[in-house]
Image (cartoon, rainbow, N blue to C red; front, side, top):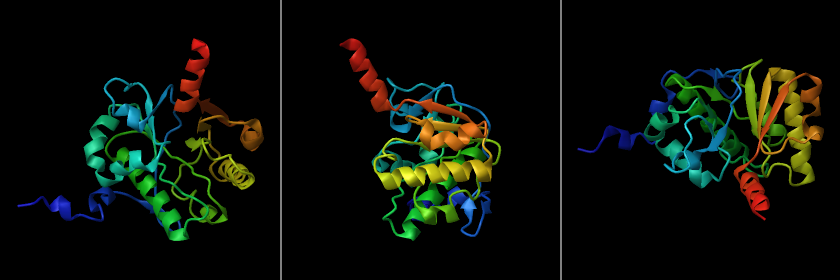
Length: 220
């Protein structure tokens, strides 16, 4: 007889014990004010050679790498719980996406983050800048006076990207009053000026591409 979980196409097990906030009922992430010492991409955490259980797991990579977590979260949670914590999942959210799909990708990333907490882990919520529609729901369910995370990789390419990224940083400072902003990638002062002015601790971690590039330069 096939497992009943095979029929759970809505992943109802992920929702048990979750709580929600805002008009769009975003899953609540309790969060933490901790600051990671190290970061590791989810795909690298799956490799026996590259894994580092002292590092926080981050989701800043192609959806093909992280979609499997949504499809079978309980398969991956035991290894994720071996790490100090995670940054909540960063499913793609583009400005040209229909609103429902943008909202859904934010929702399920937050739900998996809250699930990790409910299983006993630590989670820093990821904030993904999108467009003015994202301001309707992106901050719902996020902790105040805690740590949040943002990825700049690929998010500062064109003028519109830069405008909305800066706007989301400003809104985060105003609405969440974060103690720390964990940035995966570079954190140019022009985009985080409001955070610096408010005394927020902005900590930038190099991306895997930047680490690889620096190693090549050192070898030359």
